[in-house]
Amino acid sequence: MAADPRFLKYVDEHQDDYINRLAQAVAIPSVSGNISYVKDVEAMADFLISQLESLGVKTQRRPIGTHELEGKEVDLPPVVIGEIGNDPKKKTLLIYGHYDVQPALLEDGWLYPPFELTKDPEGTGKLYGRGSTDDKGPVLGWLNVLEAHKNLGLELPVNMKMCFEGMEENGSENLDKFIESEKDKFFTGIDCMCISDNYWLDTKTPCLTYGLRGINYYEIRISGPGRDLHSGVFGGTVHEPMTDLIAIMSKLVTPTGEILVPGIKELIAPVTADEQAKFEAIHFEMKDIHDAVGADVTISNDTVKTLMGRMRNPSLSLHGIEGAFSAVGSKTVIPASIKGKFSIRLVPNLTVKEVTELVVKYVEDEFKKLGSKNKCEVVLTHGGEPWLADPNHYSYRAAHKATEAVYGQAPDYTREGGSIPVTLDFANILNLNVLLLPVGRGDDGAHSTNEKIDTDNYIRGTKLLGSYMYELAAISKE
Ligand code: BES
Ligand code: MN
Ligand code: MN
Figure 1 (cartoon, protein in one colour):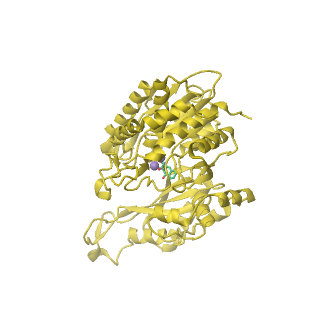
Figure 2: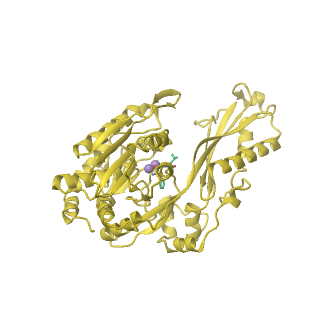
Figure 3: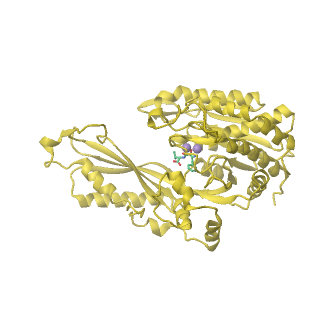
């Protein structure tokens, strides 16, 4: 069933209101990973609640415990849950999104202040701002749908339950426990789930996403000297933690992306013919990725290899070294203890546990080979399993129809290289099919400087989410 034409017309006529709603949200710097923004994250939860309440959603602000942030014990951002409609004749859709964002500073290279939604003065329709695409724009897309229906006096085609968190960018701590504890309470009677928190692959082809890589994040902690030392006095006489660490980190991955931890390659599920065909059907040119990266520095120039590298093969990235001297100038210090950080993106059949066993053994073996008297330990700081959904489920078929209606073309079926670990928690704990229905484009720059969403994606994205609800209402579950 196509969306009510009055809804689609309303969306077109209220673009400015919708952009204004996004501007209000972007103006709240709800950075979850930084102690100085704790109040702003709370304020963002309150903003969301007041918006939802005014749109007729029965909401609850649920505390989920405390955590340590920069050495202080603070409340975790609340989970905001809500429901609207409970007609037993209708399907019930669960949606999830996150209201927290990554940090952003003007001096990192933003064209405009990151927490002021700014229209591109060149008239391209780009709306710049932290969270514009990850994930405030898509979350507000749902609210825009509700607003249209409320103001037009239209009934929603499905019942909705919603769950919004403010800790996604910082590991979604305790959300799994929350889902578990509400499994037979709030999260009952749900037919299927939709998450809009990823992106198209390119800048012109809408997609439905049925897989995510998992992620294991590790720290290699090396210590020895009782204090930081002067390299003129102690250089050449002690085992230096940084030297040990660089030696180990250089043995994790090659510059062409080959993971050197033995045993990982062997665990990767073989590519099936059906999978190969799905990857070959994806609309994708090397130029898309070169544009998104900002340079031609791809490892391969083959599209299918590149897509598989991103979506269905594991990768190991080195992220940083805590405790290293990193300021300007030439300080001659030997850091006494150091933490090297890296992560491995997981795909079927790599599990958090098996990969960790392989990593720990390998790092320990390699450390022994160094003959250093320092201490070394490798710690998994967080882990999330990979996820795959059934793309033939009725929820995907509904989204396929909605995409054709709004964009006049069939969506690509993609998997994501990134991770939204709660997807798997929702799917497993609640035994649900989860659909990832992206709103933004591949070049939106989530987490980067100058993150943006295109006005067209935000507005058509609102129509897409609404149309999906209509198609879902009408589609047979068979
Ligand atoms: N929206 C992203 C997930 C994502 C990233 C989807 C790139 C598609 C492409 C989400 O907000 C995110 O940043 N996830 C983190 C999870 C991590 C903090 C556990 C990620 O992927 O790094
Ligand atoms: Mn996100
Ligand atoms: Mn993110």
